[in-house]
Amino acid sequence: MSEPEQSSSVMPVIAQYIGTAMTKELPSEVVEKTKFHFLDTVASMVSGSQMLAGERALGFLHAQGPSAPQASVLGTRYKGTAINVAMVNGMFGHADETDDSHAESLTHPGCGIVASVLACAELYHRSGTDMLKAMALGYDVCCRLTKSLHAYQFRVDGHSSHTFGPNFGAAAASGALAGVNASQARYLLSYAAQQASGVACWMRDKDHIEKAFDFGGMPARNGVSAAVMVINGFTGVEDVFSGERNFYDAYGVNPLRHALGEALGSRYEIMRTSIKRWTVGSPIQAPLDSLDTLLNEHPSLTAQLDQIKAIRVLIAHESLSIVNNREMPEICLQHLLGLMLLEREMNFTLAHDRARMQDPRVLELRSLVHLTGSDELSKLMPTRQGIVEIEFLTGESIRAYTKDVKGTPDNAMTRHELERKCIELMSPILGQARSKSVCDEVWRLESLKKASSLAQLLQSP
Image 1 (spheres, rainbow, N blue to C red):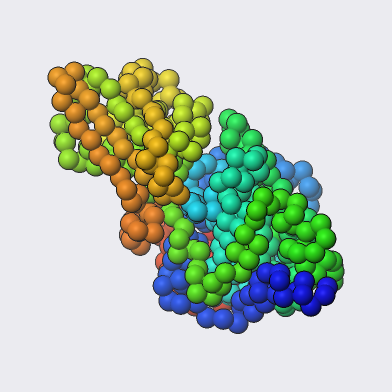
Image 2: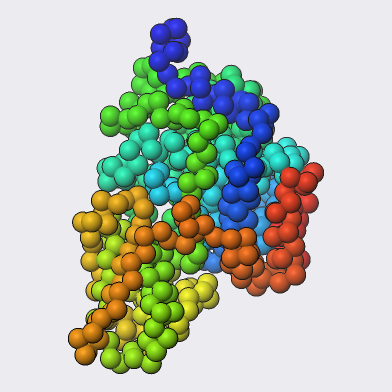
């Protein structure tokens, strides 16, 4: 590579950042936020181990036959190679709509990145602090990558930002845990680019199996694969981001070629990532927050259900196709609003109960929900705001507008709120006491000497 090419590329900056990540201390607020997302994601994985996508992922693992017990499959007693286990845990993490999301980059970073971190931390005998550093690094690379490709237009063009971003983020995190230096990080990113793929047709997946693979399984598998290859001597192209036939030429339309290296070490993307209060699709969070507000402000609302004329919901146009009358309960906005009105609450069990989609009482309320895209709310993207207005037969109406969804950076969850969510997710598999122990271990992750001890706690007793 010539000197002018090298100086004009983002590669030296990002490779150095990856190669030195394990030697740098994270700010205390970043450590705390990273713990939140680590706990939220492992709880999603434990829960996802018994969902349909989780069952299919386990079937894939068993089909490989006996393998080296390098890493632990969460929520089960199985072990396998780091590459296979990363894929399985990644699919667990997005077996439904429980995991975190980063609105600006159109990614769900946790399911792919945390799966790769867990696998490589066990494989390379890393500590809790190492996992936190690698995870924060993965989020930095993941989110910057798709933003550099103009994430929302990238999806309109048919690509899956939710796969591309975590693919690179998982590679960076895995490479750091494997011990790559800055020179090896160049090869690492080249192998990540060669594996980068994803088509946005996942929106049509009715069973959440392919989607689980696209969002979590494939990025985690690719990331660990890249790290294992490079640390074992694979070499390759030194700068996949510039020069002839480079990554941005292949996938970018007026790409922001230097965005991948901007403000590294000072702007941590994990601080801009959201955790879901409700275990449902991201575009439904604001409408459920709004309905929850109405239920709390109007205690008599559930006694007036037969007096409701219409339930009008406004969200951004970009979110309509994701949640409009979908076949899966956890991403069907109309169903969830009707169900929440009837039950006065929403939890994991309710959100995933497919039988309730045929409940006549829910169907009656669902038929009253009118979902509309809003020009004004679209202008406010990537924040996903929402409005719910209930009109009664008397002509009166009540309305709630959610600007800052609970769990987003401007309206963060507390430790207690997150623990309540995560214990609910993990208890059916691990038990109440063990689930609480997982939470306690994550809050003191800096003192963890071996990742394997936490992984053991996250397996079924």
